[in-house]
Length: 111
Length: 116
Image (cartoon, rainbow over all chains, first blue to last red; front, side, top):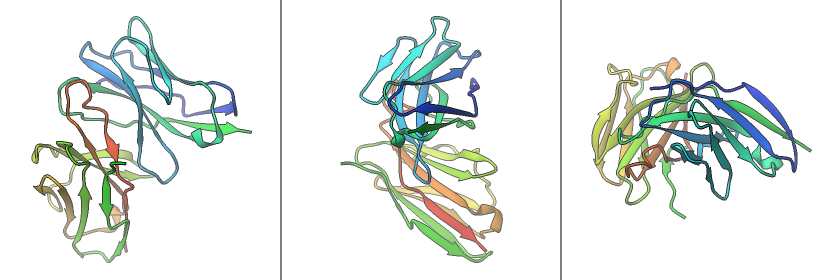
C-alpha cells in the first residue's frame, strides 16, 4: 500500500480556511485517497475521499493534483470543533477496505 | 441515526484474565474492522471481516487474540490471557463494502482496556 506523508501539526485561525496537505507520491492507479479525523478520545470519523477528481461534501473539499501524488483537504471555515488529528490514507479499490493510519496532522483551531 | 456500538466502554482487568469486547455493526453493513490505538503505536488494524468471513487478521497477535462474527449483528474480539501491553483503546468499525466505498468506515466509540 502507498504511504502518505503529512505535517505533524498545523494551526488555523477560527473562521479561516484550513488547508491540510498530504503527499502520496507512490500512489497507484487503483488507490483512493481517504481523509479521516479523530477528535480527542473519540473514534475516527470519515470526512471525504476521491480517486482523481476534486470532491466536495458538507464537511470539506478534497483537491487532488493531476499527477495524484499529493492532495489537500480544505475545511472552508474552521471552527474550534474542527480541532482534531487529521489522517490522510490511501486505500486499494475493491480490496476490502484495509486502512493503514499514519501519524496524521494535529490541527489546532485557535480563536 | 445508525451507529456502531461497542461494549463495554471501559474495562479494567488483571493480567491473565480473559477479555471479551463486543461490537454491533451498522445494520446492513457487511464489513467489520477491529483497530487498536495506543500512544506509542497509533491506530493499528488488527483484523477485518466481510460477510462474517475473516479477510485479514495479520495485524493480530494469534497466540492470545481471536476475532469472530457469530452473526451479522455481532463481532467479538477476545484476548486470553490478557497482558499489560494489551492496554489500549479498541475500536470497531463497519462499512458497506461497496466497490469504491471500501474505505468509508464508521467507527464505534471504542473500548478502553486497562490490564493491570
